[in-house]
Image (cartoon, rainbow, N blue to C red; front, side):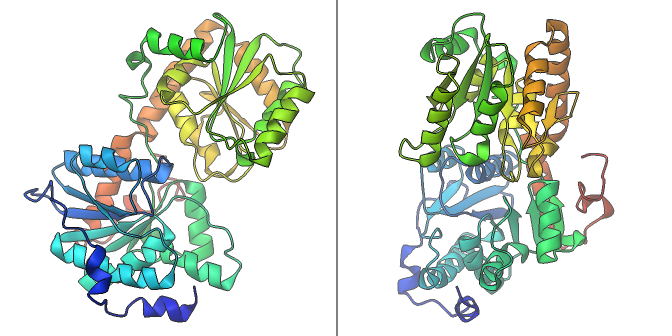
Length: 426
């Protein structure tokens, strides 16, 4: 996208541009609270989509009105089930002509539905949402869900920079906030750190029945009484499966099972590398790739240890906080925002991303932990998540930013970039 095309997004829409806007029934037409529009490319199963759904649910619970624009997807049914208004537009497109048309479509929706604030969660839709919000005179804000590559290239940096153009900019971790401030020059008064949250009702040891755990144990062929180490996440290089297999070879003990829980592309070269490494290390009887799991709370409950040995920069670490919410010890690598999600020596271990021996040592300690120590760690982990990483906390802090913009308030001292500024609440 060139600068000329970006500027051209401000051009007025034609009637054809508005043809795709929805006239779907509005489930919150009589809601007394302000209406917030969240915009994202599509409604899949990732962290961006889950955060959108969690914020929409929180807004509705508090009497506000939640609207989401996307290209659709499997999560749309969940949005509709909680009473949010979901509208499909081609906001996933990076075609400059489509993005230009989306400005008019979004502006029409903002006016039709009385939207008071626009919240963009990805770059392509953010370009259209920015100009639509400005055209309608409503606040515009963004969330950085990751660290975008290519910032050293002018055009890519220009494309990425729309996410730094919000009246407020949310980062999902201190790591991301520091990157945004340094790379895009977002000042502290516009920048907020609001980590993702866990639903503590769903991810609760008390909510998972023994029958659910036993069903997974049987499905995955795990022998009763054998310790289980789980690596949750898609089978991709960034998740560090090869690093973990190297660490396993540093241990003499073989009295534990390892399950890689996550979707995988059987045609991907990395999947083939992982399968080959398992065979070459003679770990076929110990390591199993079980695929995706629809009952992750039960999967965490089944595990004795959860490892997140990422080797690439992670913006955050959702699996780490989910595991700790379930009272499980975690072993995570010191990369990106992942390192923020654990209390080293209290709720788990923090190891270098290029040190299989260090990872092996943490695994040895975790597997050898006495039952009383496990119980104490479990309690600490749950309390840690309750304090810092709940969906309620994420929703409350996000709504606080919304209120700040809607009420035209200047940011107060305690709403600055709290993690970067050393706020004790982080």
